Amino acid sequence: MAGPSPSSLRQIRASQLKASVRAFEELGAAAARTLHERRRPLVAQGDETIGVTWLPLGLDIELSGTLAEVAGISGLRRVARGSVERSAEGPLLGPFRRALLSLGLTPNRALSRAPYAWPHLYRRCGAIRVDESGPGRASMTHLDVPEEMRAPTSYLDGIAGGFEGVIAVGGGKDPHVEVVRDGRDVRYLCSWS
Image 1 (cartoon, rainbow, N blue to C red):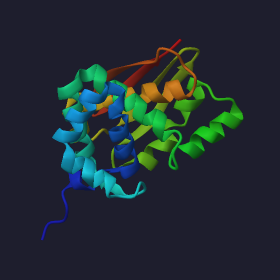
Image 2 (image 1 turned 60 degrees about the vertical axis):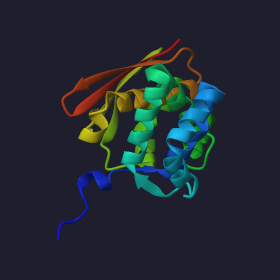
Image 3 (image 1 turned 120 degrees about the horizontal axis):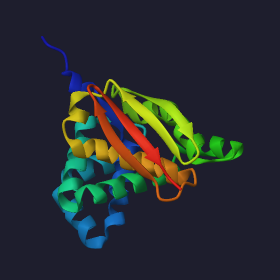
Image 4 (image 1 turned 90 degrees about the horizontal axis):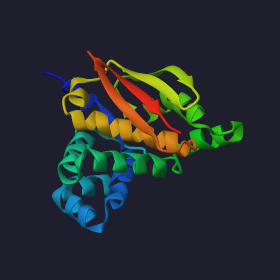
């Protein structure tokens, strides 16, 4: 008897999915209603789960695809950014944010914690490495990105929007993250003012 497929082992925390659903409001009431209606079973599954529970990554990929269809890539990024900003106040990422506040929170410091925060949000979804960091910029590599995360381009844009949220939480203005695919790895080129 075969075990579960590798994709079923890739997971995301329910709290992150819930934060994404709450961030639908970033798009306005009409778009939020449309998203809630189109993904009612997915939203219900997130609502019925406690935040620290691991859910199949496919639920988040499906949600991101719907967001991109309804609101475009810019809307998807806006929701992802809002999701991270909300999560930074929550029980999983809040401790990282509070630790950074005690050290003097900057976008570079916030991004430097991404490799440590990633496994608290994602399971079996590669790793994040900070490659370089300087005034108004940083670059990170997402190592060994699973195919299901790479296949829908919109999903990587959602992750980039999440990193824009990290920059904003760190106090950066006008954050922008460019996605550069490199085989199984993905680079995120971050900039802000």
